Length: 436
Ligand SMILES: *[C@@H]1O[C@H](CO)[C@@H](O)[C@H](O)[C@H]1NC(C)=O
Image 1 (cartoon, rainbow, N blue to C red):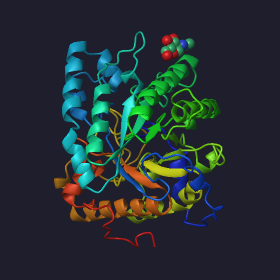
Image 2: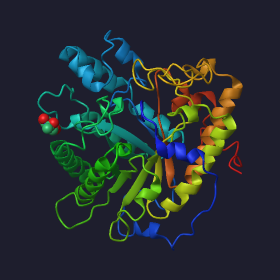
Image 3: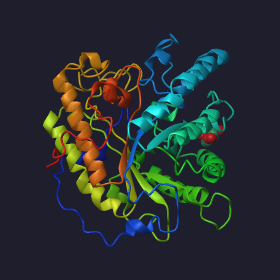
Image 4: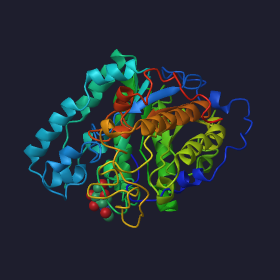
């Protein structure tokens, strides 16, 4: 999940676009991406349809606000401070209970029954290694292993997503550590530790488990902070390619796909990066949200739909180079969910976020679906379909953020199924022509 306190240029830029020219592709560079590998899912031909298991093995204040509120300490704003400002036994017991209950095998059954084929599972580096002075609490790794087995029981594929790196790659609370400027990229020790962890992840999961066809080496590095970050990210992607695609330290390529993130750059920034056939099994992850800037939360319903449809014009051409998966998106169109912008931070939509101005009341926009009007539920359905159509037409598929949330039904796939704005079969569309 995305930027609490930053304006993201790439998403904002989408708003100004009209659906214009599609580039005529060379005969399928895209096919070459997979020519010689067999990841266990036909990424070139079948669409990824999935959901993120957010807020489980990495805490996010807005997904489980109760875990933060019950500490009684407002300085606990992320998983780092969750460990730092609590007695170790207390924090450990809370986390263990959370790991045991937030997601269980029954969720995998329900996700498969909803016609999905993938889950993306965020996890932090601290599941593998905690350095001196780092307050993180361990114990997540057995749940990752269980999750891969549970997913297999229901025919679901798992994307292992490294969501937090040492020093934080973006400063978001969902990287483990909320900070005003991230420090992963500026410290070679942090990057070297991340490389070592990627070797461990690939060593275990790329080799033994056929059911984890994709590893995403780092979620949302802060490319918006400039060239220094981007050059570290580019080198890290090359190193991760070696670590994941050749996981046994031999010249033998494995079958695991490397899922890069666009680092908040326009997809065109990555034109020609890791091109097939020299590089194989590389895919691109892009995250598309419409509520993390003042101008976006002020859009009308029809402008939101138009912006969703307009994503096709940039996704389409890039998907001809590398399979492009929209790995995070949501039908929610406000930032009203409690703590979405960080614990103790308000919303742009109702003007309670610093510097923002009132667009509308947050009442009936988030929280329990029982407070949603039927017109709002219709809009959520339209937003869901406009995005699904766009991401299947122009890209290689989609993974919604997120499966469940304590008190933000607008973001919850589970709540969408239960309340009718997400169909029980994702190909069952009510507005198939919504993008014209
Ligand atoms: C770099 O990061 C490591 C932890 O990964 C830390 O121990 C070290 O102090 C950091 N160095 C600097 C100069 O901040």
